[in-house]
Length: 458
Image (cartoon, rainbow, N blue to C red; front, side, top):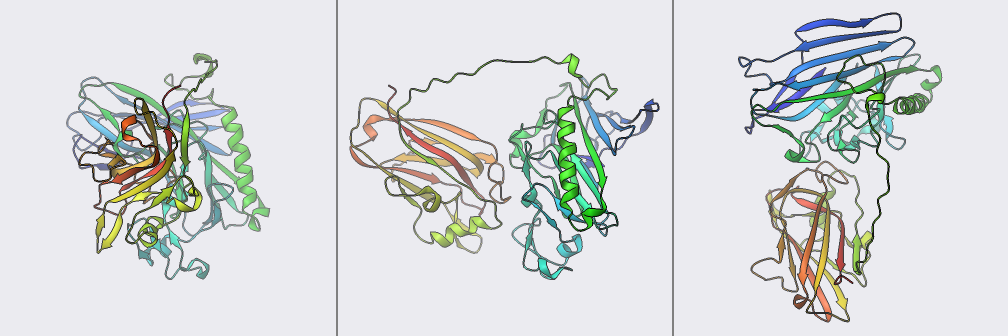
């Protein structure tokens, strides 16, 4: 099914399956069939998203699978509305499909939906400790659908292999990112225990409301979403090695990517290759900035890793010395809150210590602060005065990516270029204080990509 999460700009969202009210055969011949399920909207349907929908399904001769796409449209005069999520979902037979593949590194036999139901829910409903799984090898594992999220650029193929004889592969192939919000570096769900296979086109996952589609009153809009390809394959040898079907699916994905944009969709709204332009050129960057210090930060995907900050730093916060520190071991992956009691947390202040032999007090320095993610946080910067009543810089309240809780290595990217007056810098030892002041939950915080301190422009 296709479904949507939407609202009328209020706080309450609604999930609705997108169902057609009329059916039409668009084309039917010996080489291709394309069918359409349509619905429209009128003002009496206040519980339905104000969208005109045309869902299409295509089968081609000698092609093991089918294509599907949707044309979504708003007409003039329709009311305010937001779209938080728009996707297609396939629920596979639980007793048939038991092996899942997301990438070369993330593929394995999987627990079942029943295993999750019998497990222990952890900090949030998606994370479940498997306490009595049907396969004892899974006991003690944490299952969470966010383990299997991928960047759009990497989530071009994923799916499941059945335990039948011969085994059957069911694969979602996304041949392009042009119909998905957020671009190639946007992270989202792919497939997970259910078995469930998704293709997510619009989502606030790892981003928050910044990536919701927000329509103003009477705003018109039309977009073609897809086509995606549902690919089916089979091989008796996959009984012993399910990766055989995964490798075949990757080959098919490469063929689909090479065929984009497709020539066969009938809708006039789908732009064919001969209707598209080409941009070529060079991008030249001249960088004359004097870089004094840089910190590049590594991150890791693991459930509950944010809790380790309070273990590693139970009383005093992180202090990083640029001269002697090693960011791979002396820097925590996320600037989070510290747990001090039952559901009680404190703000945290990190210190970066560095030495300067020569300082030009009459010039300006620059702190480049690049954040890989932010969630319901506010980061304040102070220079050589931790107790300064007003910070030298604040990001303000920002972020809704929830990337920390969802084991993400990034959410939306935030970049701040912070001017620092030379009279705040001293010859000898200097300290930059980074304070994340929001402290209501364990998930509030930021993930640093890099921090760079630059001298005056040459």
